[in-house]
Structures are given as structure tokens and as C-alpha cells.
Amino acid sequence: GHSKKSLTSSTVRVSRFDPFCITVGKHELVVSLIDTPGYGENLNTVDSFDVITSHVEGLFEAQLVAETSGAERDYERLRNEDPLVHVCLYFIAPHRLKHIDVEFMRRLHKKVNIVPIIAKSDTMTTKEKEEFKLQVRETLAREQVEPHAFHSISLRSRGACCARR
Image (cartoon, rainbow, N blue to C red; front, side, top):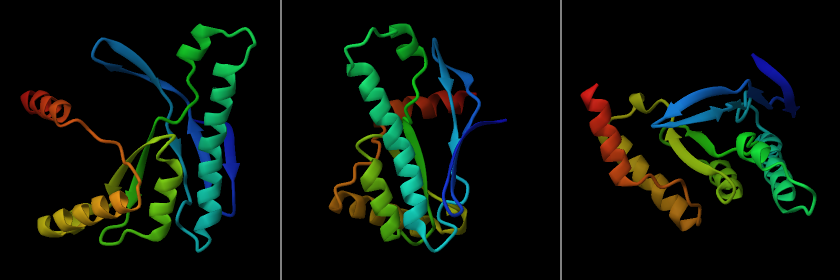
């Protein structure tokens, strides 16, 4: 279920799901998913944008204060209860990267790993997908937005591991 932590704007909400555990190699990670229903659905996307970025920036600032304050720190809690948003899966409409998309990623890329994803890419031909990916990469580079860089070695090993299953 959803927890009660929810910010709202005209239509957008930031809602955090209850945490769950996943195992990655030998490590167990506690993961919390955050959904932003309503983002991009109305004409005033700047309001929606502000609700989401304010939420992420607020968590970032609070963590910074917790880690740098002179107060007695509970290192175990800081290590185990990480409230930060670490990855943003940002869905881009097929065939069109909008200015607001670039602005959103620009505002958050220094605080969160941004992974741009082309939504509904199955509606595009392979050639259209390749061209659009290139356009997105070039636009983000020109606008100095740094999406998360997956290392090709880890991607290849993941592919090999997944292919064996």
C-alpha cells in the first residue's frame, strides 16, 4: 500500500510505496518506489515539475544536514534508512522530447541518477528508435544534462547472465 507521505499540486502527487527488499549479488537492498501520478497530464506542467523536484531536493537537503550536523549521529540509521531518491526513470513520449523534459532532467541530474526511457517505443520502427535515441542523447549533451551512464561491461555481463536463464 501507499504510505501517508504525499505532496500534491493541481493534479500531480508524489507518493511513496512501502519499502521492500531485493537481493543484488550478496547484498540486500531496501527499496522504496515513488510514483508521480498526474505528472505531465495537465497544461501547467511547471507546477507538477515543481512538486516533484521540491520533494527530491527537500530529501537531499535534509540528508545533507543530517550528515554534516555536529549533533550525535546514528550511523547505523543513516546507513540503513536512506531517504534519498537515487534513480529517476524518466519516460519520454515517443518521437518528441519536450522542453519541459529537458528542464526537469537538468534540474535533477546533479542529485539523482536520471535514466531516460522512451515510452511506448514498441510503436516506433527500429530506425525511428535509433534516430530518436541519438536525438535525445545529443540534446541532453548540448543542454549539459548528464543521464546515468551504464557501464558497457556491466551491461554485457548482465546480458550474458540473463541470456543463460
